[in-house]
Amino acid sequence: MTALSEILTWSESAPAWLRDALRRIVTSAELTDADLVALAELCKLPHGLSTSEAKPDPLSPKHIPAPSDAGAVALSSITHVSDVNALAPNEAALTPPRHGRLLDSTILDRAVLRQ
Image 1 (cartoon, rainbow, N blue to C red):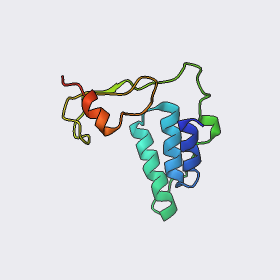
Image 2: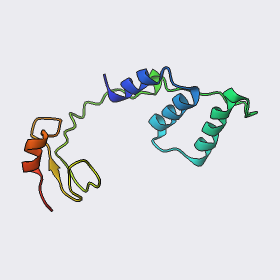
Image 3: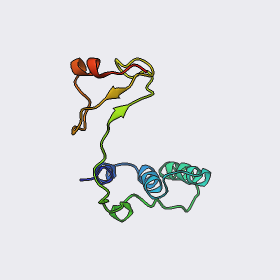
Image 4: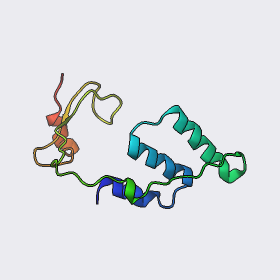
């Protein structure tokens, strides 16, 4: 299951305005001022605070792009951090090769590179 499919499943019990916002983000990646105004009106509708005729267009399977054959994405390091757990500002944390998670804290202490 892709991350977007999981978001779609999670959103099924969310308010209509949120599902509409998710659709807008998935399909255009950036919300415009007009989008924000429309979403504000959708938030007001269930409470009788808007006279808008707008109807929500919730995120649905048709909005989820097909999985790509571009290959796996691997996280190799995290840099330029600030206020992140035990990492000092501007340190880099390496991730192990062939693994998608950070090293446990004892190994991470040895793997942190000072810049």
